[in-house]
Every structure is written in structure tokens, then in C-alpha cells.
Amino acid sequence: MYTEQNIRGLAINFLRQHYKLRPRSGTSGTRVVHRPHYYEGVTIDARLAYQKPDLSWFTATVEASSVDSAHEVLYRVNYFRIGAHSLLFTLVVMTGYLAVTQVQGESLWAQFGRPGVYSYLLTLFLTIWGVSGVLLSRLKYYRYIYAIAQFIRFHADAQWVAYDRKIFEGLKSKYYVELQRQCLRFGFGLMEIQEDNKVRWIIEPSHIDQFKGSRAKLPLWVAVAGKTPPLLAGLRKKLPLRPGTKTNVPEPAQPAPPEEMTDPLSVGAYLPMYERKDDYLTTIIPAKKGRVAWYKQPARVSKRLRWKIRHAIRSLYPPEIRKRPGYYELPWGVTTAFIVTFIAFGTLIYLQSEWTAERRPGQVAAAPDLEPLETAATPADSDASPEVLPGEYDHELSAKSPSVVRDTILDLNEDAIIVPASLPQNTIFYLRYDTSGVMESSYGCGPLVRSNVRGYILQEGRYPEYEVALERATYLNGAFSIPVAILLADCLEEGAPGYILYVGDLLSTEPKANFDLRRYSNAFELELSVVEIK
Image (cartoon, rainbow, N blue to C red; front, side):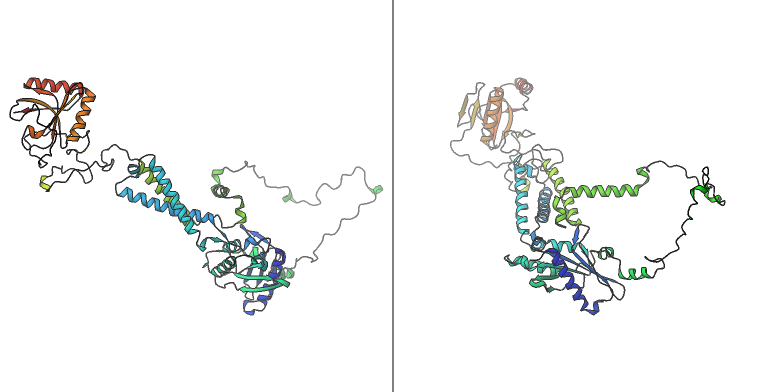
């Protein structure tokens, strides 16, 4: 079992011999070997650089992995990128679903109601996210290898992965196959360190950049850092002031005279031996204020702002980000698509949540449609208003709801919309509630017989079905304690459809009818009409 330092040395020796046996790569000049170096989040275990005859530099980097650092060549699933991509896919699907619903004029808030719609959206969101994440985890694209991820960040002429053979002993073959697959895909070399210091050459690095020049090239100063380049070292030796060359050294000062020969009051030669006016005519530099204001140096402020933003983003990453280069990073296209889709999703959620059960002006589908009536036999028989839009409810028609009252009271002499049909047996023609709520019903027309009665009644409305009229009558009698009666319209006029609902009793005179009409209207705010019975 080798240490990482032994693997680096064996790999470098192999590269020295490998490139020496290939004259066409250019082997002139002194080869330069360096120790590990840290560069922009990447640890370069070993570097080799030499100068070709055409004076261009060739650089090779090595990622050495021992048994102690086996995680550098064994793949792991990149769950961070899977979660981000599946989240983006979920947002796209949910945004499309809400957009189609919005275009169709519908609302999930109207369909599921509150708070059921929130449970539905959350369940659907988590289901799509989980299923898409499970499916993406099966793709080989999300297999992360530390050694490969480091080489992807920069470009060198040759990039090698060296590993101890004992790393893959006892492991599943899929780890070794994945390492070979990624080395072949990205054009990296692969060498295996065997027993007795033997190196097995498995894959030769590609001489064509598989990334088509999209990576930043490894700087020359990183490749040759630590020693002077060979050509520069030769030039330095030829310089006149190269290190070690003797130069003109000033003569040492004369020894001081004996102590008894010196003047005890002498202060030495404090005046110059000769006049040099330039030494005394110094330029006066005015004093300046302290630090320059920040608004006067925008370039420095912008750099500091960019640094703060970058530092704030990096602070959100886990502490081990330096141990996994590229693991927690996303392309700018994915980040931009995520932001745009998230804004669109939030906008559609806001538009959908504005739905209310009350209809507002200009809203077609603000409330769920009431139960539609049966269509007429021909368009000419329909009484639908031409200004009603498709999908809107026509308030001129009545439906199965006691609160729906026609705005225009039909006169008994109007043409019938509903074709009369024979009534089934045991049908109640007349029903009446008195003020105490006692009900009286009859299978005949009751006191208002078509040929024997003259007078006036206060009609509240006409309803197409008996159940609807009964429900309305029960409500009026219970709420206002007034007499209410239901009468089959056919009892008053032959062939008239539906049921007539009126309040009070049969009135003999028109003034009495008008008086009761105003009394009921003011006291109970009922919309009544006086109908004359002949």
C-alpha cells in the first residue's frame, strides 16, 4: 500500500520517461517537477512542465489518490444537483399546469376551495419533485468524482489520474467502470500504481481539448512556480550583474586619528565639503486628507460589492465546499431559468388565489355556474338575452335555487316558454301557509277556481317546478310570518306553465290590493306585483 506522496513520485517519474520517449512532443530543455499546489479551489497534487524547442510550454498535472484518499476516485451521487434540477422541473410543470388553468378561465381555488387547494398543490408539488428526483438519480450524469471535477475546472496540456491498485479491490466493478468512462469522456489520462513500484499505463490523455476551449488554461506561473524557468535562468547567468559577480565597492573610511591628537571641542565636519544647492532646494509637498471618499473611487467600491455578494453566496454553502469542487455549483442557465420560473409560478398562484365566490364586474367565471336549464327545441324558442356571453348565467332564467327570482314578472297572458304537459296523478295544485305556519294543501285548484273567482292577488313570482316554489314559500312564511299560497298556474289560465306564489289572501278591490302591496313591500322588502283574476 502506497502513500499519496509515493504515488506522486512514481507518477512524475513515469511522465518523465513517457515524454522522453516521444521526440515529437519536444523534450529539449530542463524538466521541472513541483510539489502540490492549491489553485482556485483545486489542489494540484503534482505538476510537470518543460519548454519545447519552439519555446512554448508543455504542462501536465497529476491527481494522486492512495487508499487513505480513495474517495477522490470513487464516484458518489450528486444529490444537490439532482434536487436542484428536479425542483426546476417541478416548477416548470406546476407553472404550465396553472397557466393552462388560467387560460381556460378556471381557478383551482374555485374547484377545491380553501384550505383544500393548499393541500392539493403541496401534495402535487412534492409528488412531482420526489418522482423526478428518483428518476434523475438513475442517470450517470449525476455521478460525481472528485478527481475528475478538479480537472474540469481548468485546462492543461495533459491531465492524469493516478491511483493505488488496492483501492478497487473488494469493491463493485461499477466504480472502476465509471472512472474509466469519465476519463474517456473528458479526455483525461489514467495510470495504475501496482506492486513493486510498477506503473500501468491505461488511458492516454486526449491531445484535443474535449471542452472546445471553454475552460481557463492553467497559468504558466502555476506550472513553473517554485523554480526559475530554464531559459530565464540561463539569461540571468549572462547578465553583467548576475548573482555572485563582483561590483565596484566603495573604499572603506580612513581610520580615526589617535585620541590624544583630536580636539575635545571638535564637532566634526557638519558642513558639506562642497556646495550642492539641490540638496537644500527640496520640493514642498502639500499635505493631503486621509482616505479618499468612497464615491470618488467607484472601481474600488464595485470590486468590494462583488466580493461581498460572492462571499454571501458562498456562506450559504456547506462548510465542506472546499473538499468538493463543483459539487454545489449550478450553471448560470439553470439559475436564470429557476428565477424566471419561480417568479412566473408565484404570479399565477397570486392570480388564482384572487378568486372569490362573489361575481365581480367583468369576470366571467368568478363563481361556479349554476345548474343549467334544458335547452329549447329551437333557437327561436329560447329567451336568452343576446348580451349574455358564453359561460355566463342568464339571470332572466330561473333555476333550482330559491334565491333566484326573475327580474321581470311574467304576465299570465305572455306566451309560454315551457311546453305544457299532462300532470301526473296525485299532484298538489294548491298549498297555503297561514300566519301560524299551518299548512293546507289540495289536489284541486282550491278556492281560486278559474271560472268562479274575481279579484286580485299579490304575486311574488312564478316557478317552473313545485319543489322550488315550496321551498320559497316555506322560507317566506317562516321568516316573516305572513300567509303564503302556491297555486298551479293552469288553475287560473288554461295551458299556463309552472306555479304561482302569492302572499296574503284574495283581494276583492284594486285599492285594497295596492294598499297591501305597499305594506308588504315596506315591511318585508318584497318585490310583488298585482295580478287581476278574471
